[in-house]
Image (cartoon, rainbow, N blue to C red; front, side, top):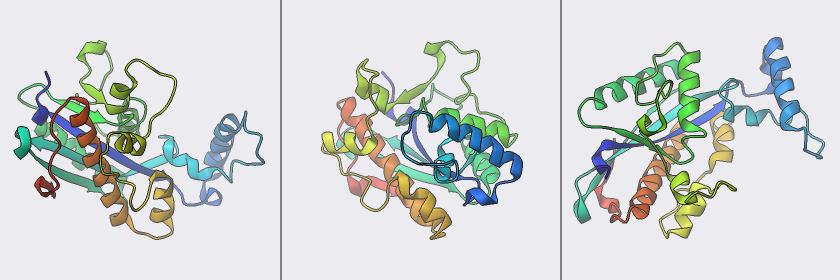
Length: 238
């Protein structure tokens, strides 16, 4: 049985490294064009590498992390509390360094776990790749290199919901609605992050959205493990 306060719930928000395709250096234009060709191979719509450049945000080679939000649950039963903290900014290297420092400080002691929605397919590998690109040391809790499957302390709420069924993707929003948990999508959703970042220049709005995702994910995990939810008044945003 995993102790709740040994789980760090995380979510990341990513954007493309440049606002527009035209701003890419020539070599990167060529590399993205080749990537886009693979993406569009079975797409019959008249789209181009330029028209789908906003999708660059989801590929670690072409995107960057602008926010990492983390949540930790304390206590048990109806009186449990949750604290949420975010690392964010335009300088990705600083964002990653601050997150790594916190993770190193949190890790010692009893066995710890990281939890994210679709984390095994997106958040965890994306973080590791961007850490390598930024020459940051990957914290042991994130680094799965050389570890056996049972030695990897990663929890994925989408994987828990699959119950062995790997045929489809279930969004955080859909799970929240299905489990009657307040949805975090009351302002923006993931498809709007790039627009809010590049056009509105509103990083704080993205951070707020990311924090709500972390809270929702933690509540989903509690439902999946038959634990009582954290009451809204017991959630602290630092």
